[in-house]
Image (cartoon, rainbow, N blue to C red; front, side, top):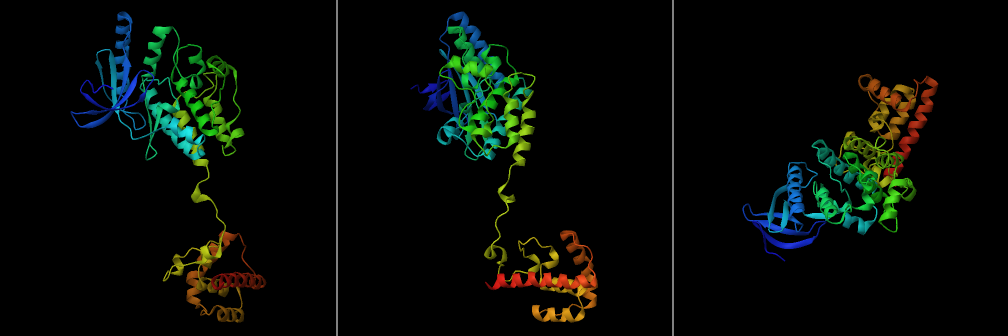
Length: 391
């Protein structure tokens, strides 16, 4: 392993990239950790000059991208036959490794990741930079769940180098768009297709286009229509089926025209997913009726779906006083061990309580005869509450 590359001190080897070795290094000027990706320039002189010029052009363009979801490029340079790119060193894991372990992820987590990738792509596309190699191994998940896209502007250089040497197009066949397969010019919609393939894989555990070899995969990409992700994963909502289908449209005009459109739909789908805080849990007496010591009744929450008119015995007595006879109210007062409210208290609090009750339960104003029925209902509710507190 080399110990120095330009001014950078090599610390360790991180792995093999598409174009060469990837190193962890230290920038002694500012004492900063960096990741360095190397590119072999051992080509014929004429090809080497053309390739190197394009390399710097692409690397500089990618270096101008400053976005939270795109890895930051610090520097480009050359040492002998090796060109290199120094970039932000990320403490996290490749999405590829995570998928290898888990196959599929929860739908909400998938959307959170894809939204961030799409945001980074949208920013790059606005600056006329197309990635051309969107895939899980080029997406890093940082420890706090933040997402970073790597290798912007570099994939094009890798394909140019291999095409120069062998006449073949380099790429990741499983994630390539139809226009890439056909060798046509690509734009931002090609990245969207590749992201759609990645989204499909994260939801189902497999890529949508499968074949025994590269040619079979490319044929599938050009001709096959994958089944909806929900067929393999029932947790996938119908809206997400449509999003995936639009991202994977083979017709460029039928596909998402820009990543911002995709972000908007993904966010709408994410918002429509059930949230833990919105899930209605079964009501249990111990959970719903327990109150902290010294807690005031007016601040207590009893999860029985009742309006605030029933949040205390006093409120219940006020409602009874407005709907029942004097004798019944006196008897009810003895049952609840609560003093009968005065006329002033009834006039002050009664209309508000009555209105809240009527709006909540859609009950019309009661006649005198209906007052007894209401009193019976109130009594049953109170008995239920007392039983819950005792038992």
